[in-house]
Length: 90
Image 1 (cartoon, rainbow, N blue to C red):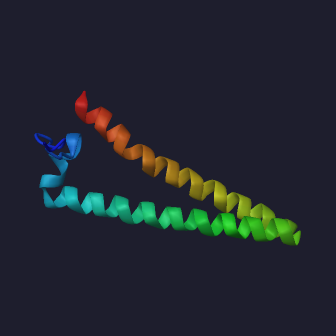
Image 2 (image 1 turned 90 degrees about the vertical axis):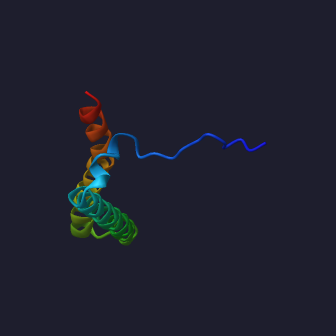
């Protein structure tokens, strides 16, 4: 007996969006933006760590701002699908 009998994968509220070319392009743009912002956050945290351990005051402030903006961008990009799902289901 297979425990996965009768289970059909679905994109849920994104099914209608992903059926058009525009929707697929928007999803691709979101994925590229997410990967880019996550990479920027990793770079910012590495620079922040290097500035902290090296005692570089100017670099510390700049790295902190970079990490703040990259982290905020990642949070916004993570929240976008949830916001879209809520707006579509209303």
